[in-house]
Image (cartoon, rainbow, N blue to C red; front, side, top):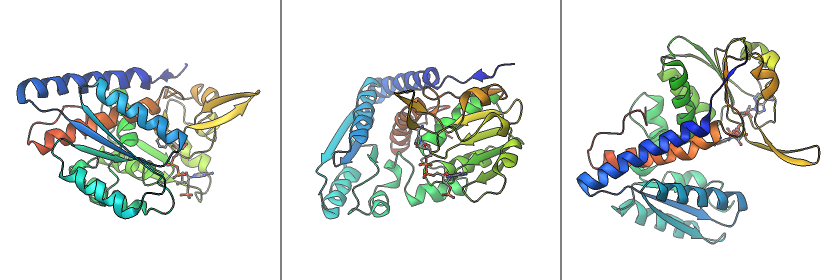
Length: 296
Ligand code: NDP
């Protein structure tokens, strides 16, 4: 039987609609408007597109968007001073520093200077620790989006074997923590894993976050498994530029029970979860109930 296609585009639209409805209520009943500040250093074209999209979707949801575009040669001191101002600004509930930063800036230092309560990317060391110890954290957007789709598809994930291929700090590790938090039996695979295919074939839930086009093929997928493809790879095929995931879609979809496509799977969920995190941060800062189903 053909795999169910998990439609991330539709799911993300639903998340955005739920965020917008909650934001409208907050404004009407409490006079509060959540605000997201995005800081971009330099002129990386891909980052500029991301920042523009984030700003537009923030405003579409009824939230305030503050964009700070700094020159590529901005000093660390000036960037840290801006973050200190945003930390102190009550109109700003979420702060996102677009990565990668130019090489002369220390990303860890910069990220760890953000107030953890406003760290809507969930990369601050305090949020990493909170997530790792099962406490209330700001959760990184991409893994949060994956978890939402998995919960929606399966209901309970308890007892399922989950394999996460990739151990980056922004996707692989937090994804594994979230799946563990939902009582999966979790394996993290990486470039030194022996017999990756056999490890993957043990997965009821297989998450690919590798950055290698179409590396996970159908023969690595357990029949009926749910496959979440985080990869975004730009390749050229038959003279055309194309976007493909880390999973070979056609062969995996022939075996899997459910699968996310690329594009239109995990990608749209990332910005939707950024908006959800900004709303969550705003509610927490005001001691108000958090939006249901939009956080862990
Ligand atoms: P990183 O490059 O930081 O990490 C890649 C991971 O894959 C590493 O842990 C690496 O292992 C592992 N890996 C590399 N080669 C192999 C291999 N042959 N076998 C097994 N494991 C391997 O990437 P990210 O986590 O940042 O991103 C992963 C993918 O997700 C990329 O395609 C990226 O574009 C995409 N992405 C998509 C997002 C979205 O919004 N949908 C958001 C963020 C990322 P090791 O540690 O041993 O080197």
